[in-house]
Length: 492
Image (tube, rainbow, N blue to C red; front, side, top):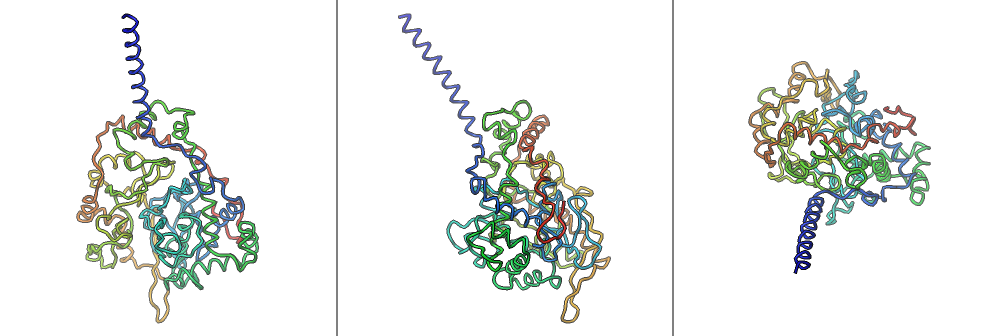
């Protein structure tokens, strides 16, 4: 009898222990799987010749209309794959990061700020990233609506042969007048864009391919990267260039060796504040409801009442700016709503990955926050923080002058905005946030619930976010080539 009782007690103790272990395993299931080579295109190792071609193209100003700006200008390794600015200054400006300024020359001149924050590039070479840009306007097309294989602003005109959505994304900055193409009358790319001609003979992409065909070193690099497809210069296409740029980004901006990654792999567990922050992130703070999965994004769109600064995307129909200044401009940014044309998608933006988030500020689709703590607190109580937000002094680089195109008979010429109009132009930076009705519309779309955290818990959450930093990403200067095939200056 005693033996039977002892056996029952032992069984009960064992069952309790097993139950405790099972509970621990259940909690662990909330954490994502660690990143592996197989998560990336080409198992994380694209052909070296293709990567090297992409590296040259990424840093070469030859891809811009006026040969004065490269992909790397706004996505520079020294600035963690961004430009370090809330809203960038693209075509017509000079310098990098916080030193970037409007040029002294009228042509090309800066015609305004880039309306959205330059997205970080980390891990975009992972297959799970099927939507790109803040509004997701470039995305995979699994239903096969378009021959090109992707849903993009080019629709059915997108060329075929693109390797992946990251390559599809690389097709578009070169067509943007404010980013890389320049203004009508400045160069042949800008003129093609003004005619809404990106694809086909004489389009932006064809003109860029012609430029590349004229550089002997690029012909050699394309032949090495695509030995079966490129037998002579005439075989070079911009689709091949975009594929190479994507291959470079896949390897150059891979970041999956942070303390959090090592925690997931079981090699070095997080401890202290970072571990407490992890528990909050995947528990009470509910951050993982959107920032889920291996790279901490659900790849969906959410409205969280993020402040909008800058010129917006010419969305909406609010006439308050015109009424006050006489300038004809709409200044809202409807986010995903401008892509789907659905009111329920207004002010929704794509959930960003949080890897290296401590390195990639300012944060928000318009870069409204230059403090990681401030953007965390915004997530905890979006509407309150939206109403409290004021554009910080110095967050946006000063624009001492802005150019515009004006009609001169049958031609166009550039001129500086007159002082009165320039003063009105500068009001755009804070217009949406300063208007009660426009701010209320952003607030009304908010879908993020309030989460109450003590200051100590916020500090722990920040410690965890810093534990998402891959230390290798702090200095990526080795990616910058000493020279590029075109012979144009390299932004270093």
